[in-house]
View (cartoon, rainbow, N blue to C red):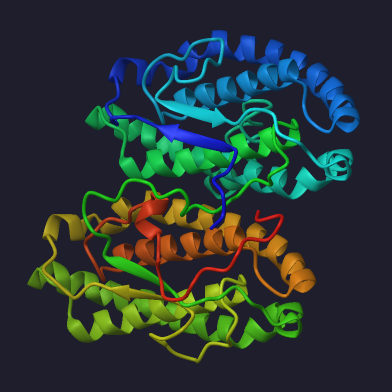
Length: 425
């Protein structure tokens, strides 16, 4: 049993949002931006002193730990407000328990001097990954480098959570309520950001965990239409890992050809569903087979699974999705399906970009350790599962809108999970 992480995100949010404060959220946050910059300057100076002190004492001094812990909490409160993960206006002090999205940080504990000495270098993989998930240097430095110049670059420049917050802004204005999937996705980003900056600032020497499935979040209000199953023990063949991209090439070609046919078939399916009020079963099976197969190809290519997949859907594969049975579909929703699916498809593409970077990190780890770190594997599993949901919705396989929260992707694990590695990024 692995002990809980010393840095934990606590979410006590009821999802209700004030339309007025949502509309002016950026403007209202300006005083916090100024204060955050000033506090960041102080945090850098204290962090340097803390590094020398921890090397000498073997632990962070209480005064430095308290100052930097308050800084990480404040940064998390501010990001939660800015990204609509919480509604109240945050305070300026980072007091524990003062905000609906809060961070618990354990008291100072002994830290290994060798790990402390190389802390900045060890933190680089987590910093790069969290910059893609959260934006900017990840929840404890600056408030992003911009929101991305195009829809295709938001995960690279503004961060996945930034793009999700933009969709959440529109949804909250219309509904007066934050979609739970969006809130939970942003909460995952905030948790990983807080853990990463706590590690970098020597508040703990426990490496941040990118695992989106832990801790368990709130279940979706409705069951997801596409479920995920993992049968993976984490072990990887170093030889096949080294040549993974080359080995996956035939599958990528076949999945691409099948995908072209699936989108062509989806056009015919659209007309049929508009007329009949339900999809044609043969066309639905063809498209659903491609979605299941593509998920397995992604899992193999991105190191979330080890066995070489078959050239077709395999229900018993190490990572597989199952799609709910066919049912009726509303004609009005069908008519506007591609437009309605656009946000989900964009989020799916951004998640897959994050998963690609997680796989690059996992490639090096798997070559060194002979296994895929659980946190990275689960990032990939989350991304490919959401992509399968988005494709199933866009291509009329199901009418259930994709659920973006990590809890909706938490898989049924059919084998005992492996122990995390020392650096479970």
